Amino acid sequence: MSIDGLDDVDPRRVRSRNRLLDATAVLLRRGGVEAVTVEAVTSLSRVARTTLYRHFGSTTDLVAAAFERLLPQADRHELSGSVREDLIRLMDRQADVIEQAPLQVTTVAWLAMVPERAGEQSNALAPLRARVVDHYREPFDRLLTSASAVDELDDFDLTLAITQLVGPLIFAKITGIRAVDADDRRRIVDDFLTAHRRMP
Image (tube, one colour):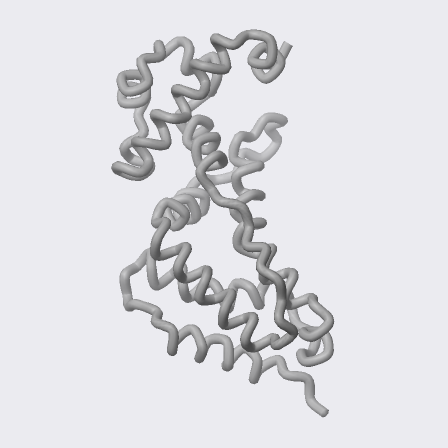
């Protein structure tokens, strides 16, 4: 029987797993991924090391599970019909999320550095990678495939477009190279629309 199955019938396992994840979340907020060690998690959660390894095969699996719980849902604001205004508003919200929730930036950077474990049936990073991708791209997918965008813009690679739009925000935050302000975001949007506006 899988751990998930055991968790369903054994409240003690549910409690110990939740305490481990709660402790990991606290450590992530305090010091990032580097702060999450077996010793720190077991000390803060008061859960034995052997119990930790019954739930999670490694600290990577533990961090992945904690990040999965901490990431917010994707933005679901209604579209106004103006591609430019909706895109600017969406970029502003993404910038606010990145600025106010540095843990998300840490998640993106950490996932980029941890290689995928090809060939394994159980990969704790797979759902987290998918969740992070969905979180960032779902609002852009909705906007850039909307009827207004299809009418106004030419054909383009959707994934590349999202990378071109959001990439500068994340890169600037991670590197500290500069602060991307509202004017910068509008320029990014306008440059994108100019490059892809459908010719009459």
